[in-house]
Image (cartoon, rainbow over all chains, first blue to last red; front, side, top):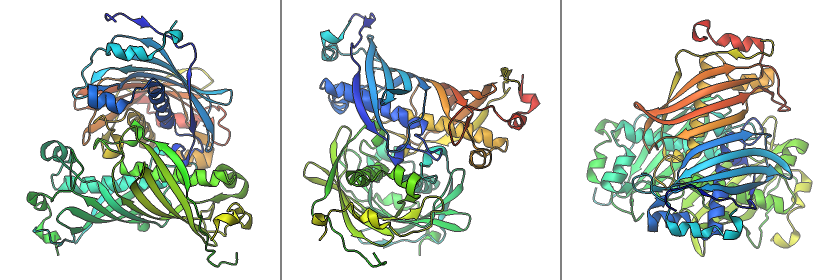
Length: 146
Length: 146
Length: 146
Length: 146
């Protein structure tokens, strides 16, 4: 750990399906742009859950939250009602106090959105930065780290 | 107080303006039905604020929340993007552990939605019902009570 | 059809799972009340989809929308982050120009919310009421109708 | 116009107030990160409205929409329930077929979020790029252009 950058890359992105409902669309006839931000968060949450990490337990038992610090979004094409999308999530870098994700939203083979997202690790009660707990790193299997 | 129903009626509804943004609409070209539920909550929040009640202080200093228990909604006509609406809020009844509101959403003179909403008074940490604090009643001016 | 009430009841409710994400919660620490309204709509949408009805095609090919006309909600207990809920959807009555649903949201065996929802059938371009197309009724299997 | 970049800078940002409601918060006790994306859109919408541009008329009468193409967000500090925020909006650059905005969200003097947002100009029915109409430029007063 030691505060250095820990270069971590998943060989395979984690894939999570998302269905588009009325709630996600707007009067332009397509998915509202902030809805994709919600979809991305579902992808990161399910990526954590795959490794047995439930954020409510992180918050209640370890006083940890992962608020978003930076986000870059490139919208390529719009999704519409009833679309079946997938959110791809890849941990690009694991620093001492933050996680850098690369994410994409696709419909079939078509890339609709690309995102780069940095989540900080903070104390849940104060929102002050803190080191990622060592044992949290264990959830990233060696095989997936380059 | 004494656990009895305290019949309380505001002679005049409290009026709060709401503008319709893209975020509030859906691909049907109109306001998404759950967005009106958010608008109603803004009306009740601002009604409380008019009497000096900030819910974050209620939660942090008195451990009080007002979760919704029952809600009846009648949708009369749809609102659309850029509409300027008003939310009317009227305290219909003040019980020992809940508040009953009558609310309407209008565009100009046109009634778009009518709602009846009951909010319970609970302990913020346990969500268990509790009596409304006596001093909370003071915010309803005598002149507005029939 | 003939404009009469067509008593229709599904013997078994249709069950759809919903996971609670950060987007669904509020600073009270529980699911925001309007989020349940979104969950209910997912249940109705997936109930339609089970019978091969995609609402985007209804809108684009048959000029039909199903806006909500009336909704009664009884909130029994709060859901929290990471909860796995199920939405139960049951068509209670099929009228000539509207559909009446009974819905519930549960966590395990616990009933969190009960809802009664009436959706009208309207022309998508004018929002004026129209008769339900006869062939739409076919999607309700005889075995499920009492 | 001529397809060239038209360097445009407002000397003063346009300021729009936003109040934080329950709907905007999450179980972390702060404003949900996607809610700021909605706040930014309100700022841009009201900036347009100041110049007499209503997007529903743009869509219905001129077949124009301004979907988001790129967005960079830097979250500095969290907002909480009941906060009174302001959204600052500044048109940074006006290209032939897109608008580049610089935006900030502040609470008092404190900078909570900085954003850079590019909105494309498209045909509302096809989402294909199109030139910004010449007369749309007129809404930017000369005094505000450097």
